[in-house]
Length: 184
Image 1 (cartoon, one colour):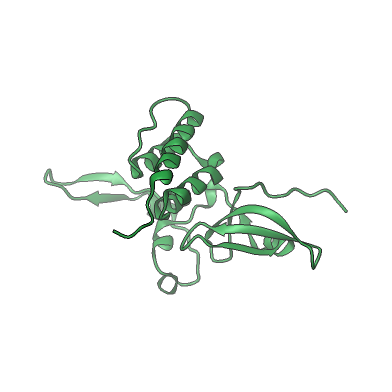
Image 2 (cartoon, rainbow, N blue to C red):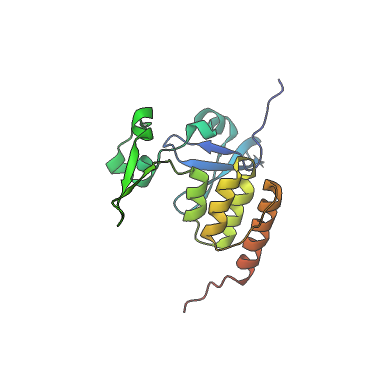
């Protein structure tokens, strides 16, 4: 049997519907003596799924920052967006968006929203946010970390990216510990 490279725990993939999923681990199913890929959806209800490793490798496409899901497609329901995955025309994406204001309006360039940030913002609990943060560590930059920290009202301070990640993890762990699941 030839040497193969296994996906790393936390590695991001796009499934057939162009939804972002996170690889968790390879499990062994004793009854079949086969390998099973275990992964988690990073949208919707964040369910954990399993499928044969061979099928996982054939169906999933590794996520790279160049293959970001356009915000306009990701934000619309599937039946409205259709089954097509249309990337915006570079000229379309670069057109400025008019932002109205009292001073007669200002112009700002439109930007696509990072899928990792969308998954982080969509997470219902701080524990889910922590899982997304730790699972996508290698895709984080200063700007993304700042947006994540602002969304949960944490101050991560100055320093290198690793220090900011550790500060945000500490903040999320603290909030997850005191997060209450009871009804008020």
